[in-house]
Amino acid sequence: MYRLITVSMLVLAIAIGGYTQTKRLATNSSSSPSYGKAQAERGKTVYSSTKRVVSNATEQLNSLGISQAYYTESQAERGKAYFYAACGVCHTADPKSQNGTMDTATGLGWHRGPVNSYGLFVGDAWLASASGVPGRPQRWDTVADLYNKVRTTQPAYDVAGLSTQEYLDIVAYLLKQNGLPSGKEELKNDLNQMRNMTLDKGFERLFNGKDLTGWGFVVGPNCKPAPEGCGGTTPGTTFKIKDGTVLNTGSPHGYMYPQKKFWNFTLRLQYRFEPYEGMESDDDLFTNTGYLLFITKHDVWPRTLEVQGKNDFEMSLAMGGNESTYTFDDAARIRARKPAGQWNSVEIVSKDGQLWTT
Image (cartoon, rainbow, N blue to C red; front, side, top):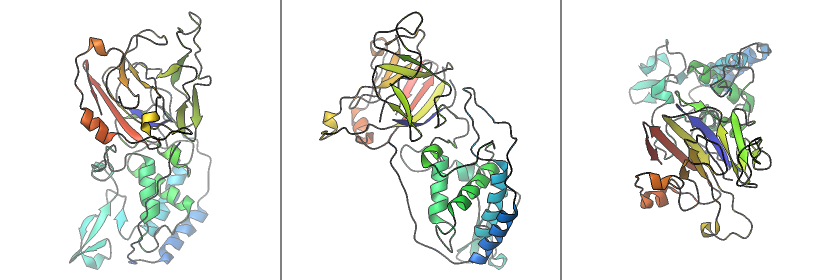
């Protein structure tokens, strides 16, 4: 099963397989009551008086026809009211406002000894700073990362005390302030969908979390695609959408590919294998999958450079390996690999005929 499939520039075909979404929730029980619920109530008053309108926004689509928009303008406006009512004493999302070190007399920000610190939630220094977490390129890699942070640690006077809709609206406002485009659909309380919403600027997502828009298929063992051969060109029973992820059943054999050619690119994705009944350890995991690069003629299986996805052989080269010169670090692979049932992160970088995998 796959989620968060993004690319920064341009793989003709990627055969992907894997197996559902695990739920993750972090909580922070600390609080500092520097302001009160009355402020949040003022935000609710603004919220209740704001009309919910049907957006006429033009959806911003990427090169595969997949929407890059995660929220609506009206939702962001509601979120603005909530943000400044519930969070505005300690933080701002207005780059024009004063921020950083503040005199304590202002009453703004967190106490830092003799001064206060008033955080700015806008810009690369906040959004794209290093996460320090393996497999997560930046601090807020997806909308899910940001949403989970906000809903489990804020506001300080009443951690996790706002409603789900209020938290969603606040995140929508933060997305708008950080230059993410608005669209026709509001941000919804669906973590799997949020994990398909990349915040890495310069990347475009290849999977929208809902359907297989932007993808082609070749399905059927030893088959070229129809009408030349016996291969199916639809997902069939091989590829399905399940809980906001792509499920590859492996039956019958085949692959899916983005309907756009790439040469120099950085591909990022996450995958997991689901343990099957009776499986005692990963030694019993015989699934075989991979990432088929630089295909020029479709076939099952085509001439390709395959980055292996098979258990115990991840990120090595399979098909096409005999025509390549390469090295790999088996010890690093063992350290990085997570067992069946857990999500693994993959990054494949192609530049001018050379390939790096992690």
